[in-house]
Image (tube, rainbow, N blue to C red):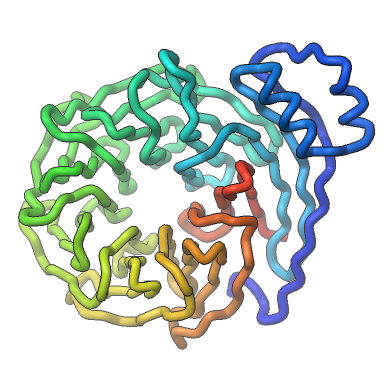
Length: 359
């Protein structure tokens, strides 16, 4: 069980250090640091450096999680991912200076440090970021026609996966380092050979787009959806559609598999999350309780986590379909979690990244 039923949630903001892309020289800065006035400090940084970044320590105490957060202060963030070894959080900002590339950021939890990975797309904002199974690489997508694979340690581009004529919006690894699925705004989900950067197969999700994709951890199944109330579940080996899952009333916004690849969970604009049996395509559980669109979902054996436009993060007991706990987040609509639900991170619309590790 992730959290107990009685949850206490407090947070204290403490200044730890300042990390900037350029040196900051301003007479106001020492006074602001001394008086601990964060909103004024953000203003100073935004005026004095093109890529402002402030590190804050947030301390939160409640029943089963300890928040040991590093905050990366940028214009905004739009994508987040947790590594399977519970050591890293990848963050993709939506801010880009005109004529310059964006960067992805890797927060290393044990060291409480951030590293920057310059990316190669000068034209578009990030759409997604995802860790490879060995946690040595991240794959990013923008609204361009390519997905990019980067080496985290070397901070360098490893592969480019060029889709051709259609834009790509999401990407997903299973547990096989050598296979990657990329979703597009067209009806195509592309399965790639990572070693050669050549496509293995095109899954045609006609008549709907395959903008949102997820590859099961055992690499046996792909879930696709986009601008529709249904989800297509594919058999990777047979290259065929197994089921079309259709119990949502409004468009599906997100999909994810459990670590055993036996179930998948979907979140929708209809404010519901549904858990499906992968083998049979049958509906197992419906999770109701959000008041707005569910934007991100995650699932393990006994627990599900959902984040919504209602700025809440819900923890569910999947056996009873009951809401175990709800955290009213700092205007966060997205979350990421490691496969074993040990490391949890959320993106706040307050331009902060919140990271939890278990006590």
